[in-house]
Amino acid sequence: MPYTTHADLGGRPDFGPVEQNAEDSVFHAAWESRVLALTLAMGATGCWNLDMVRAARETLPDYLDLSYYEIWLGGLEELLVAKSLVTAEELAAGRARHPPRPVSGILTADQVAALLAKGSPTERTPSGPARYRLGQRVVTRATPVDHHTRLPDYLRGRTGIIERILGPHVFADSHAQGLGEDPQWLYTVVFEGRELWGTEAAPGHRVSFDAWQPYLEPA
Amino acid sequence: MGHEHEHVDHSELSEIERRVRALETVLTQKGYIDPAALEVLIDTYQTKVGPRNGARVVARAWVDRAYRDRLLRDATSAIAELGYTGRQGEHMIAMENTPGRHNVVVCTLCSCYPWPVLGLPPVWYKSAPYRSRVVRDPRGVLLEFGVTLPPDTEIRVWDSSAEVRYLVIPERPAGTDGLDEEALSALVTRDSMIGTGLARTPAEV
Image (cartoon, rainbow over all chains, first blue to last red; front, side, top):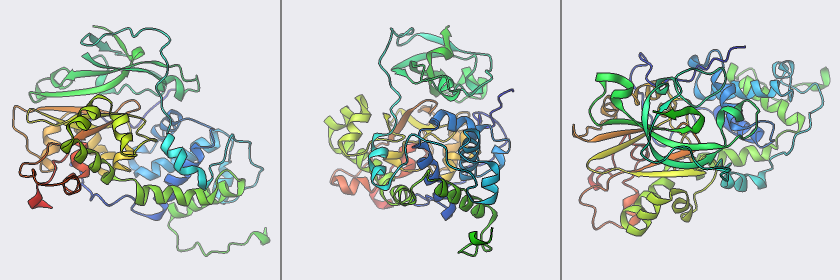
């Protein structure tokens, strides 16, 4: 089945002005905070990883019509059903009809602070040398892929400079597909605005992003 | 099943509220979640973690040259010195705004944001207008935030594509030499640490 993300927005026209919000507005309704908490608590059961969560959200067909926490809710429901932790019928009924599936852990209140403080670091020990060096010119992969990726459309097939070597990190593309961590060297690559947007780019406009080694070829 | 009657009248709930309530009920009945943990999670991000954390990091960097150097060299460790670690801040990089260079942060693919220092992202940061436009027309977007920069200032947009999270250290405003760290931190806004704002002057507080 072809993979379609609806979340790859960089450079797309026609979204209009940015509507600002005050610093103290975290949640706009109580249900939003419930969705956040349910998402984090279910993440702690170990049934999926953050890259799978991103994939579940960005493939929601009505992604662009949904509010932020509606996207989170839709992604969580997708994963729960896909992993057979709940059925669509149970969600519709609002009550459990079948016994639970075994999960690797249940987050308890006393574990929350330690869990959040620890996070999920993605840097791994190198198994070989980095292919690219600081200052080297590289070109990003031009062809789209049929799975979750963190190479945005607007940065495909563009030439930039390696600015920082960030170490080997869990490779999102593999991790999202359930293919394991597959750590790959990660680099900060910087692009001139003109390389991305042509003459409409203002002088001094640069964009940087963090690219895993499989996204890059020597320029 | 008559014995499973509802104890709460849900007729006042909106459709989305009913859907969230249904989900929470099913997950609780299955034993996948501890309801008490949900309350701790919500309280954490509503009251404990927010941009005042990052403001303390910036103020420390403004008054303590050695700390500023550590922050630019290894932001994860320097931020941890102040007690801010963990989820969505596992790998931090701090960038300093200077008279010649302004940094601004986005996540065009979703909503990646440095939670331990800034809390949860504002709606505009997660919105299609910001994510689509700031990589293409950062000056235009900054103008909407009331930020005008000299034409020869480099504007660097950081698209948070991997698990590295970015914190902007805004320029310290002029006329703040006599202020202590706490007074300085009150000048540091959330937006100034994303790059869509500048730190406030004492007169603006």
